[in-house]
Structure formats: structure tokens, C-alpha cells
Length: 215
Image (cartoon, rainbow, N blue to C red; front, side, top):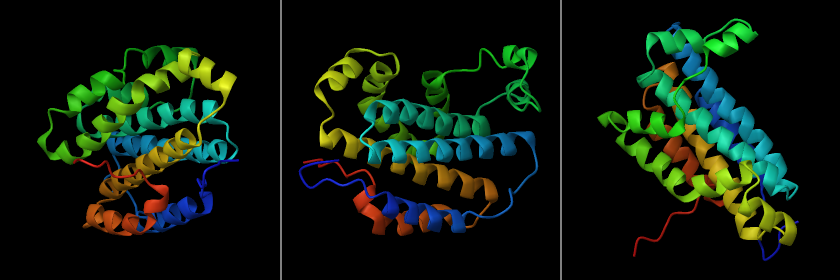
């Protein structure tokens, strides 16, 4: 278990997500392949996040970090699908069944770095990109190391996990969940959903990323 007063409060995080799920529990505003795929990917991010919470609460940080990277990529791909993907890319990702042929057809879809670069060109996403780029700038290299059994994975497996790192991973995942719920709300066409989610999340600071001191 975590030391030094840190606690992974899964129940508190689940309460936040229950509330946000109620807010965003609406039909998609349009029944198109693009909208449906974006919603599926946002829900994929939320599903992966459940694994992050379980692993963090069990002090299994190696698995949690691997899941966290997948969660981030799912969220980025959800936003990229909505704003940037070509009709051909949407078609290749919107498959009805998984076969060797359909898997081959889905290759060459841009990776996270290229998707983020594409999203940077969209002025309306400026605020979202601040959050996504901050995550990528601070966490991407360590997460890659964990995923590929690099130095971070070796050192922390041998010597243990700092409680602060477990807490940070838990909070980052929860922060990405808030963004995923916001994306779902936008896809549902829920009026004022961004402001409502921000207001609701303000009461759950104990399980969300800490604000950086800019001074």
C-alpha cells in the first residue's frame, strides 16, 4: 500500500465518473461513422482507465503505466478521428469484424505524435491541446520506457515504486477520463457540457492532477 499519507481513492474517482456519465448519457448528435468511431474511442479510453485504477490501487504501477499510455492514445485518436481523419481512414477503422484482411487495412493510421501535430492546426482545440501536450511533454518518455521494458521499468521493478509516482499515475488517468467524458458530451451535442463538467470536477481535486505552481 501507499506510504507517506498518499491514498488511491478509487471510490472517490468512481463517484466523479458516475456523475459525469449521467451528464453525458445522451444519444449521439449524428449517426455517422465518424461520430460513432470517435465515441467508441472515447469510451475505449474510459474502459482502459478502469484498469489503471485497479492496478494503481494494487501498487502494480508497471501495468498501470502501460495502460495509461493506451488510454492517452485512445483519447487522442478519438479527437483526431472527429476533426482530422480522412473518410478512407474512418472507413478502415470502422470495421464490422476483425480479420487478417481488415487488420491489414487499418495499418498506416497515424501514431500519437502525428495526430497531435494535426490537432495543433485546429484553433478551436487550443485549450484541449494545452492539456494533451502537457501530458505528452511530462509523461510520454517514461511511459515509453515502461511499455518497452526500458530503464524506468528495470529500475522501478528492482527497487520499488515511489508512492508519489503511483499517485501521479492515478491522477493523470483520472484527468484524461474527464477529457474523455467532455469529448463524449460534445459528440452528444449536450449544451454547455464543457463548463458543466469543469464545474463538477472542481469538487474532486483529491483524485485529479494537481495544478502546477507557475511562480
